Length: 322
Image (cartoon, rainbow, N blue to C red; front, side, top):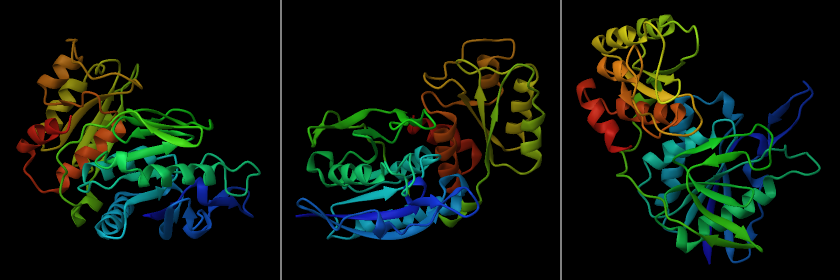
């Protein structure tokens, strides 16, 4: 009989209406689960009880540490993490970067609060437990399970604010058919990074978006504030307007890493254009994120910088995980 540990962190799945008029995360993780799902037993404990829009890097390290402890338990066959959907894609990717165990870690949540008449949390939890216990998903790393679909953490994005299936992207790894989990793919795994050090809590990586009329002032300001890195969410295949190439050059000269991503929801960064476009941004020192979206590129950047390596080693390390 498989045993799964469920770690609660809050989010809509743990939220109920509050006297202030807005939903607030209040439910303990033990209220989200049955103790047994068929031949799978589940134990639950709380790591945090908070809306995921309020998380900081210290909170994410706390979640990662809790997942690591759960995976180290020889009596545990997999881990489920309940999480708010707002920033679930960042936490899932971060956990995947430091995941060293063959045991699956599955993140899930809800689009409707626990006190909704049609709450979706219980079903999502049941399906996530099934995925975490499935022996065919051993070695698959960290996964996102929602509304009958299991996908890889890498590339997953919240693509709809209210839909029952809010996530897209990544690779579909499995789906539910007639109450059974059908495994369809195994994600490519990357070399796991070391456990997050305490320095991770204080790494500052800003995201700055390019748009018509944008100036590089915010990029300059981020450097002046002591940011360790900036992710530039460029337009299209990775472009930005007048002045950005010069600002990137100033930033990198000051030791601030600049990663070039795209604000487009899908597709890789492919430096193509001059006149201040992606070719000039890379020439100035920006590092293309390829298929990583700005938010997951930010997570990878923060993890790598927290290891204390000199900035000149960053491009090669970053490239390893693309």
